[in-house]
Length: 555
Image: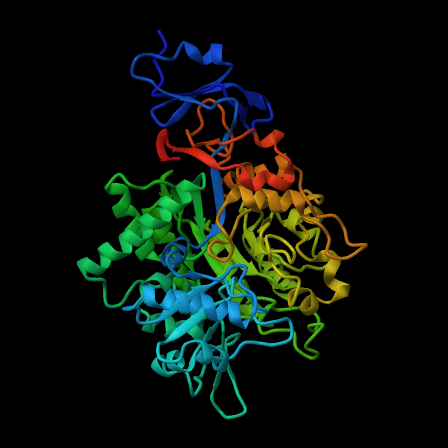
């Protein structure tokens, strides 16, 4: 006699993402796995008095969303910061900051997120003098949406030891004024790192800053505080239908925190944490990445990935281009690794059987990463490595076919293109230049070559909601006549957050689809997503998130 189910979702419009059986009405779960997918009648026999029943009311049920590129620890810490999305003009900025400051009387550093590069106007760049006019008696700093630039007032610069500048590594800059003092704009992590350390967020940023563990080790109280931050992030993910996280910064500290949370029975999402390889490291350091991969390799908590940053971002001219910037002649950006450095790291990581994921935004950085992956294949032989390039905001015609040829995953973010989800066109399109526009954010172009394209938010760089990302992919429109259509269909966009996310993690045999024997990672939505007009897709919300057969969020 068949065993009964722990949980059944019935009366649903199930989009399984399984090409063999794309639709169903009901799904049954036992022991953390899916045991039946079919009609209400097919599944009814698995019900008994102990089965938890969820009536979807005819609404959509989809596989749990896989967030394939995010920054969990940082994002969780920033949830309580001032959010400036949609704020435009000096007066609006001043009003927001002055309303926020009294609610944080004990904050060492008042922090804001999502300050557009053009928050004042498309012509005027913000400086410490603007911020001093808003708030001068308390240290204040705000971050661009991409998290690669911060702006600080004079008080913050003084207290962090940055007002008179500082020697920095390649690709980092403290913008200096004619008076010999910092202007307030800090480009890349080495430049604004002292600000965050002053704020007491050094441990949160270590996965990005150094890839190392906290030194000295956290006290028990500090460890508890860090766990609480992580839990807040996991709850935020579950609330938005996310059941798996592929983090894009990491260190052993993050893995230990998540392991402690798992031991408490409160790990609400499956999580993969990489080893962050920095340009001051040498290839023998990758032994630590192998150690992390060996120690953490379960379906709930894993490593096995090496994360690298090759360049910065377009907005601050720190992305690396093949040819000079359209609006900064003679400047192509400065790579964080020489080609020889990156090739050596890629060859060693690949030899160890580790997956590599590299932040590369400019077409020069993208080419450099592909060259490194080609060098690794030549040195070690061809294998199913599924190495990744993160972002690919600009590429070249010559490099487009290389992704599929090398088996490289294109990890891209629907919320990022100019014009998407309130992202302003400027300054990005002027940085890129008209000649490069056709191959900017070229999701469809890359997908048409046969390359795997996986979607994500890059939270907290963009809002975390996968459904808003799906909407952005479906509604994508060219910003000028004659540019190719890079939009995705609804099913392609959903696959980018489910099927392709599982593939990117070598887990397509266990998740990303709803089929018998797969992990019970499921999201019940508030409407029929396939019957919803694209323009209002953002109104469709997760009402129940199920991870490993357990309800992790319910509206």
